[in-house]
Image (cartoon, rainbow, N blue to C red; front, side, top):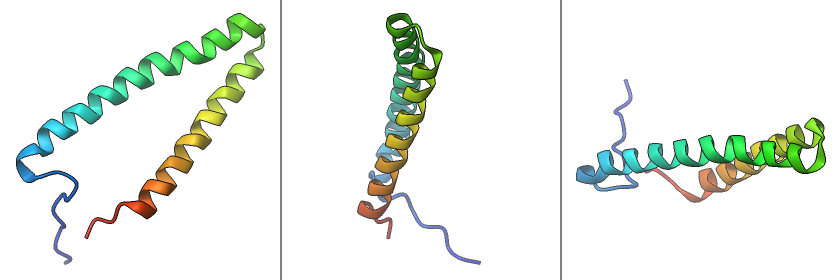
Length: 76
């Protein structure tokens, strides 16, 4: 069985605070942005298709950022 690697991004005594910060920001941006952006697009354009397209673009952008981060950050 392979030995589990320790979390290397933060010092061990800061992992809990880092996880809390990450979760808090995720809820804030996901909850606010995930509903505000598409609803604003529908209000301005009157088109639900444009709102769905904005969600697709956001998902592709997030996938690109994750690809860059996966290649940049190495957990050794």
